[in-house]
Image (cartoon, rainbow, N blue to C red):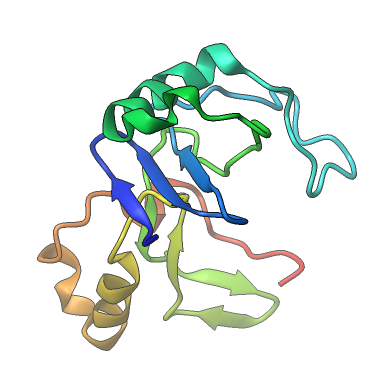
Length: 153
């Protein structure tokens, strides 16, 4: 079975261990870690939240009705790294200073999670010709945040 993506429904399906795996990236993510990420949280999951997942499940069942009677083995609910305004950090970073050296040709492509296809191509073209910045149709630039200093680089 090929990977099937439905960007309008924010979902995908794929084969997984002789079964069908359905997943998605919700358009209105539920915030977590209001006071910072807990220590040693790497590779941990959040509690199941079927109510929040229902939006994606409805889209999955619409696209693949045969899943309606399927056994659900597990709901995986993990954090994603969104930006505070849910916009991408994409483009040439402002000049950043590390000790005495200036970094003047640093590009950022972050905050997209898995919802974007083709950003790498645009960034590669942008690196080759920085003047493409205004014509490539990308809406959020890396200077959305104060990135003036890199620490522990």
